[in-house]
Length: 257
Image (cartoon, rainbow, N blue to C red; front, side):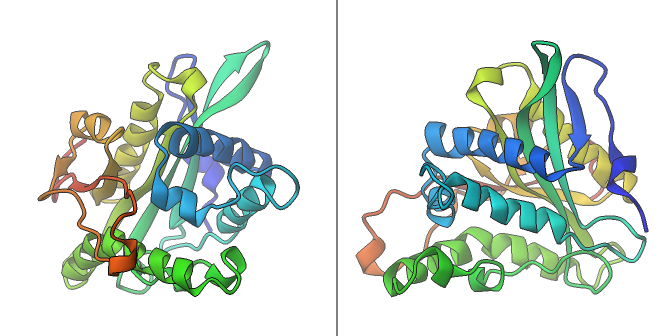
């Protein structure tokens, strides 16, 4: 079975893009995601699915990071032995050592068995909402509703491709750079690594749900927006909540990165 370590491709300068090889790198990468989506973007969906992100103590951020570590440890493989999910970290030199400055997660998705993980718009299939919000039916329902809206087009595209010659897509599920290391092209390198990997895997189309802070980078690298921002279908009691703008973007079939 293919090893993730084989997939490491240094970029040739002080920024290196590396495939995660140990839990500590996941935790360091999660800290970057917390800074990007919590402190900077204040992304309501991300914060709601990681409610402990800014809490201290063992049941705070360490618990949220532990879920990501568990996700990394549960990676599946396609029928060619390639990981269906790749956790990337960007590292830079600092005081004689390398530190994690950013993180991205790419996933190979497919409705066809053996060609990738099957995407779902049912959040309960991947997250224990009762553990996150014990006895809070309202918050659990809100998360299920926004997640369904957020992932609708992702699932539709996977279904559209299931009868095609190439039934897989390469999905950028998250990409974030710590504020201390921004404006160094790190996000672009994390994205480009995935686009290159999509080509190595037979020219898979890449897709993502782009935040307002990331879509400029994605557009420069060949993604194109499809339609308008996601329209969240939620019950009237949630209508006043401030939800993040996200645009479904894709590279197009056969488009080179």
